[in-house]
Image 1 (cartoon, rainbow, N blue to C red):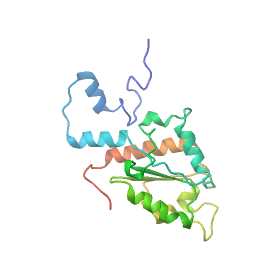
Image 2: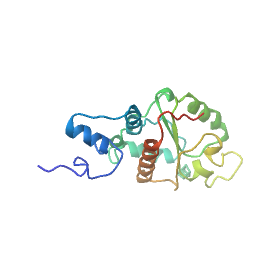
Image 3: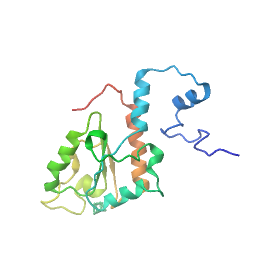
Length: 179
Ligand code: SF4
């Protein structure tokens, strides 16, 4: 019985069972490492998005969590209904001026460290809504780590952004906090 490409470690993605760190632990049963490495591994392997969507892009985000795209493969199936148990905000859709205080409050309630993905043209730049009612880029409200182009971006684009974010998180020093 053969093993899948994922199981034999040939896919170089920062996900459970595929990093050098995890392969060494699985093969030898013994691992010497630093606390920093363990913290980084835990962080990028279990990013938990806050349950939060703004417009049509949120439908694609929901599809990403469903069985066809299977967000759970990346340790992210747990969309948190409380921002206090989330460390990732996916801004999926246009941000109206009325939503700014709500969005900012949710972000402020998320514990550090936390990350933000701006999903789609509207969240990143206002998109086609160049008017007074829509914020012309969510980076005016919260710091953004990864931008996704498109209207709407497909689930593959969101998965690509999530993997890029995992690599970014893996490269960050655990002690670093952003205010
Ligand atoms: S980028 Fe397109 S799909 Fe996404 S919120 Fe804007 S109009 Fe809707």
